[in-house]
Length: 309
Image 1 (cartoon, rainbow, N blue to C red):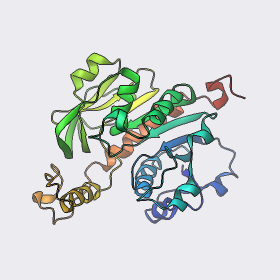
Image 2: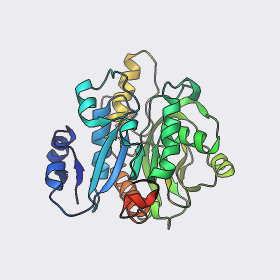
Image 3: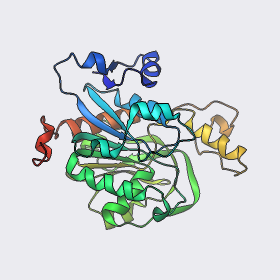
């Protein structure tokens, strides 16, 4: 089944060129099927690129999905045209009285910024608290994991001395868990973060199930026992060249970045990298949509909060 997105969103043409089954809102309106309503809170600067990455993963499902793009504020973006934001994104005030089957909160380039110094920290906290009553299951990615752990569990910001960048080997700890169903015993996933997620610390200070970890990168995949929350500390949505773009950006800015680990062929940045995590990313998102969203969400979303009309 396809994902359902606005007719004019640039991702429509991008995904169709990749033979991804995309259904525009106009066509979907003629089908008598209730799609899953998934809200994507996009905190990344290059919003169109991030839209394409997440929509690509969400598309690999037998479920019809109605995507709503959400921005955190009305501040002018340096990397995304205002026309695009105004046409395709909503503000929190527009949807705060609605219920959603799923919410995805992306990462953000805020690894070295203290929480209280994040301009939109109050809004992040508001949305995370709101999701408890208005969203069946929320998926937090990279920096959003760190933010959610602080807001929900009071865990302080833990920061690495050097940026973790590269493609790391992970092992599953609970192979029969719904979110890791079908995973290989060992799998690859990219990371690009300063945030530190020590597995033992997460286990000691939360009631989350630790589902996958890396000996080098630390905790990778956590979930609440009621499936209402899932946490992914890496970037399974990344394209093959995303880490490359970040490396050259930082190098050109004079930051002297280290080469991403296990990424460039022969550790030569002049050679094009390959995506070695794509199948894992698709399976992870498919499992989240099926077992954490579809299997537990009410058909009538008003039942999620009976006080809503």
